[in-house]
Length: 245
Image (cartoon, rainbow, N blue to C red; front, side, top):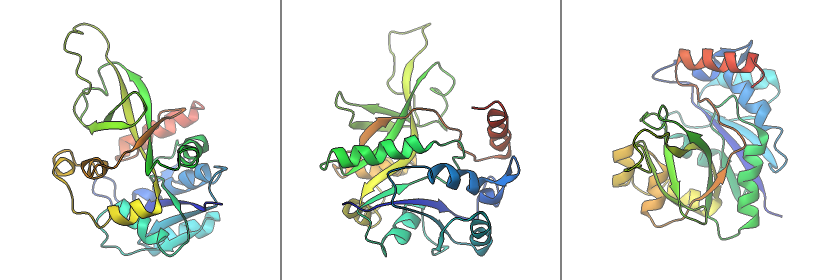
């Protein structure tokens, strides 16, 4: 049986929202919401929080989670995920973003299922169908375009696909949700590859994979999420949670 590990990278420092992982959301630290949601996933054999700070370790211990310490100088969350995973025997590793308190366990399970159903899939991620121009035109919202088989063609901060002859209509597009499942060999390779040209241009790590000719399976998510990057995002999450979203 393939061993599946979920890793939540949780760096203490954050440029736009200091100590983001410990920021209170309706009385609980942000990281606790993520942990509790991810812990409900049926297809994870183990779930850990990979951090670089004892304050996060203490918070995780308080709410009953499992944490592992990682190097504070790692260049990315993906590197942090690999550092936590490499000492385990996990063959499928799921990168669960620590700033996504509205995630659902079904999102994680769908990623793992995609990898288990298709042994040829080296990597999988999520998308959510959207309509309208607000997020479509926002460079902070990443868009994904896939082929007919659900494999990623490209990820971009630009409005893709571009509807050349659709003046006055609402564009239909897919928002990329930054959760990933990797097969162990790919993740080990990924952190050793240098950053690619498109990755540097768009500031999107997953383009490093596509530029290497590796395919990424894209799965439909049952819901959209709200990533927390600012204090305003925290307020939006609290408002949505209070409405039962």
